[in-house]
Length: 371
Ligand SMILES: Nc1ncnc2c1ncn2[C@@H]1O[C@H](COP(=O)(O)OP(=O)(O)OP(=O)(O)O)[C@@H](O)[C@H]1O
Ligand SMILES: [Mg+2]
Image (cartoon, rainbow, N blue to C red; front, side, top):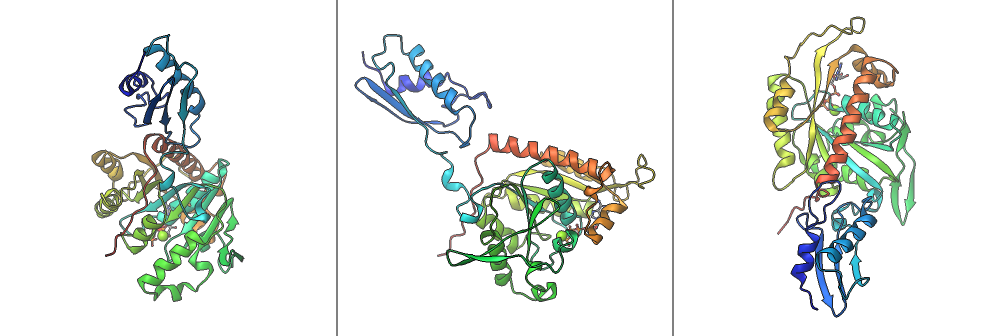
């Protein structure tokens, strides 16, 4: 009895991936079906290299073929399934320094001064408190604020030669591995750099840092949509972007520009969601009182309109500003409203990243074609 490739394909349409509940043919997981005499086989590609269903699904595929093609199959026991190292592997970070970095989170905004760096710092620490390995790149080359916020001003990271290339060791504080241009140059010097110098500095921070194994690499971006943003999406496969905004109308208008930059068809970085900062003022001694200084629910409405998640709302709290200035971020105060707010926020972000990684392919780095 002979069988056709279409029959095998039809049989495999009955197999669903347990996580997505979609059939594996529709998901594009099946390829290269072949039949030779009493042997048959196909390639089954998993989007995640560590897909927990890799083994069990191969068994289910064989059972489906046997069930739908009849018991008297002459190739029972002769079905060969190849599972290549994730189909998306070529899109992965291909720089040696980033090879064990699992997720890259870009923290961005349209408008300046809305609290990107503050959110990036407190979020990174909060993520690290969950036991995750966390890195933070200060990508604000012209105005690095992370060293001060991490009480690392004046520090110089160690640099060692690896295969003749100078490699930076990030500096760890509060459980987070940090690099910033501020560790190498006087901030006033970087201010007068031309664009090309700034982008090459960012490339070095990305590729010439010994990141090692990192679960979440948080990138604190400068405001707006600049060369720095473009450099990031060219150099790194960014898992997702987080947009920070205040609820105020002028900030929202700029936040939309920030969202469009990432979702534009040449860039295509998924938006994990929006964080509303300075949502309301809460005096620390009256934690139940809320004063909506910048308007109410601006980001909630934006999130609904743009169909993206609102990841969280962070109030204006004096200790957040003080923590930034003193280099002792407010999230470190166990049991405080700030610590609780960021704990919730980091849990939401971890979940958003998990969802994104299940449902979407790794982000392709942007290729700028020069003629
Ligand atoms: N939720 C908050 N409560 C109190 N102060 C805050 C809060 N968020 C930010 N700030 C303060 O607002 C100021 C601006 O914040 P930050 O530097 O984080 O903004 P930014 O968006 O990174 O700015 P830039 O666009 O210049 O990079 C800082 O003084 C910071 O301490
Ligand atoms: Mg900043």
